[in-house]
Amino acid sequence: MHLSWMLRCWLIFLAASTRLAPLPAQAPVKQPHFVNIAPRSKIAYVTKNGFDGHMYFPQTMCGGVAIFDFDNDGKMDIFFTNGAHFPDLTKTDSSYYNRLYRNRGDGAFQDVTEKAGLTGAKLGFSFGVAIGDYDNDGYEDVFIANAGANTLYHNNGDGTFTDVTAQAGLAKPAGLLSVGAAWFDYDNDGLLDLLVTNYTYWTPATDIHCSMGSDPVYCSPRRYPNVSSSLYRNLGNGKFQQVTLPSGIGSALGKGMGISIADFNGDGWQDVFVSNDTERNFLFINKGDSTFEEKGVQMGVAYDDDGNANSSMGSDASDYDNDGRVDIFYNNLKSEGWGLLQNQGDSFGYVSNSTGILKLSPGFSGWSAGFTDYNNDGWQDIFSANGHFDYPGRDTTQHDTLFENQQGHRFVDVSEAMGKDFMHRGYQRGAAFGDLNNDGFPDIVVTSLNEPPRILINSADNGNHWLVLNLIGTYSARDAIGASVRLTTQSGRVLYNRVSVSVGLMSSSDKRVHFGLGGESSIKSIQITWPRGTIQELHDIKADQILTVREPQNEKHGEAGK
Ligand SMILES: [Ca+2]
Ligand SMILES: [Ca+2]
Ligand SMILES: [Ca+2]
Ligand SMILES: [Ca+2]
Image 1 (cartoon, rainbow, N blue to C red):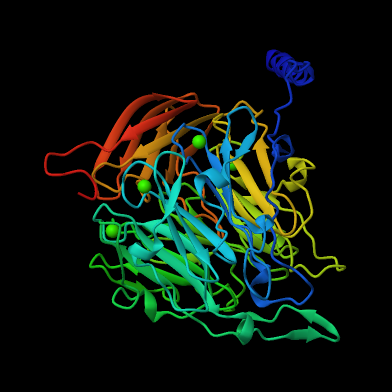
Image 2: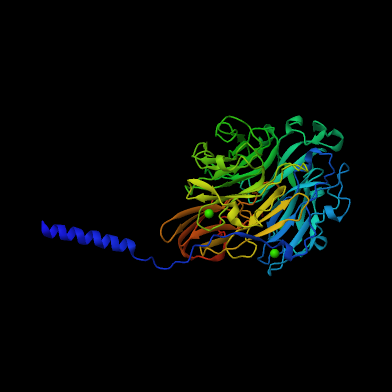
């Protein structure tokens, strides 16, 4: 008894002294933030929507961004689309030009637009940009969605581009506003096809003038007709065939904005989510026979949890909870709250409420948006480029937001901790994601109406590990858009990502596949499922590298597109 009492006292003393022992000195874990390096370069580009107080309907959407490597030097370059003068819809001077900036690799970007032939001087008002190597020649080509005729530029491989629209067969009816576009191989023939989201029919002559009291305002989209998206099949000889109606894409009429491509039901065929402004969202399930069935309502992505169709602006698809199924995010205008849709196999669950998104988002009007693992912890965070309509003199400018993913369960708003360059208030519109300095931490480029863009470099200072995969298709289309990757870390943690380029709104992101690995510096295995079905396994991979992987050759397979 006495002994037992002594022992208990000793144990209590031991526990107390352990508790009181000073902790070993530990450096605080640093959180990455963002620094705008655009002022280091001569950036002539200012997003110009031609604003003159009249509030022409399409002026709210301007300033698409692409992050891609046009000259194959391993450094991601930046392309911006731009607006035009109203009501004539012409790029009346060079301030309206689209712009290409070459990444010099020293933190500065060089304007190479004129040499590249990408000013778009004759294009009028441009909205979205979609990057894809449609002819599998190893050089990324550029498609631009416009108010007028859309444009395809072929990358000649020598720093110049040629407008090949006329011979490509990508014509559209006059007055059809094309906002976004995405390259993907819907029929798995090794050639990238092209989906274009259209918004409505509009010309300066049919513009409806709306006002609130005596103030002009942008009209509600509901005043304008709904239209379908367009699908063009790549025939492989530089020509495309319009398959909008036979493919079933033409059966759904809305106001298309963001496009997210993924194999949502895991059957080996790439499906399409389209976010529609003020109309229900679409989910086109690829039936594998060159047709799609629009199943947005059945699969639970058409409306929010209250059954409302909301403004659904930009969208992105990614596996935010690392369960092997690709989820969907879309943002909305102020007071609506943003949509996070969890892929539950046969359908999607609206999880904005349970994940905290619905509490964090109603104060913001979002445009481009995307998943990006800014802190390399293996959980995809959500960025949104924000700003309400550009009514001068009202409190309509906003800052962008970053919602940090807490282990796939909840999101918390970490925007303020991202630094003053991140917190810039404006009418942000386009945004693209990519690793501009190849340090394994994703960066963000954002446009803002009537301002220069921001090139937000990730400070990369929490020491987390990462892997970037540069996948090159041989039997599949060279860009390998849609290739999915399952990564298992040394400790057995499983992460998912895929080649995804059409991210957000009007914008196109770095096609390389990025993984944050947290504290783990080695990878047990990587399984790549290439778009045409080949499965490739790699083992014992070191972290913190950009690894190029070519699709394995199979005797039965030729080169893509041959
Ligand atoms: Ca480059
Ligand atoms: Ca090409
Ligand atoms: Ca194809
Ligand atoms: Ca994260």
